[in-house]
Image (cartoon, rainbow, N blue to C red; front, side, top):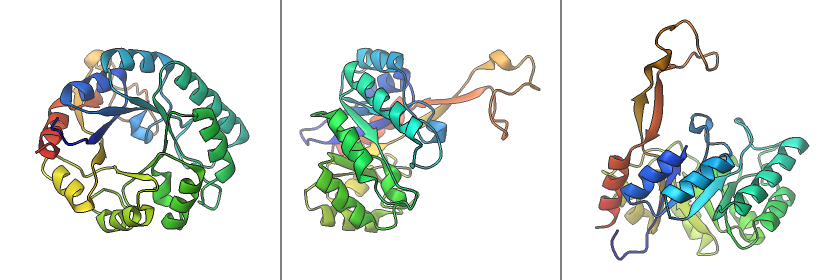
Length: 251
């Protein structure tokens, strides 16, 4: 990368993804499982192998299920246990988000998670993109002392949310880091996104498909949900696309 101190974070769904992100030039990794459902908590084994293969900061998602962000007492307890274990085994930070049933930030649960995280990095994820008042939510996270917020500006992609992202950055005024991230960022527009927003940080998910033909002997059997996804196709980090974005934003 160039002399610009850019945070280029890649959303990864496996230790292999983390390795590809590192080889492509990423400066840090957000480690998840099950990216199909928006990213869930990774395993300890995945974290250990990712740290071995990608010697860059690795932040771990703590999210017990797909769906919303208002968790049961049991799910919440599991999240705290997962965060403690991930930090114990080398996570450089925790990515999380707690909302109340009305979609506002759950201050008490966030506070307890931050106590668990201690001096490591804390990231409030894209749960902020569904809150009713994004500026009120930012103020609450600033009050709590959260390190940064991952957001697409309450839009499906970063380019679509660019105007709201500008307002969020202005509102934050350096009190909390705003990490633009979500879909719609490619080598062709990554530099434009960063320059337009005046930021030195970006979060992307760059994937390509692979095929595992081991199930092709009996195509009537499916190992997925009711949508019957392909048994043969799966997705991995696209090292070439990652390198292309790194090259674009390093100029």
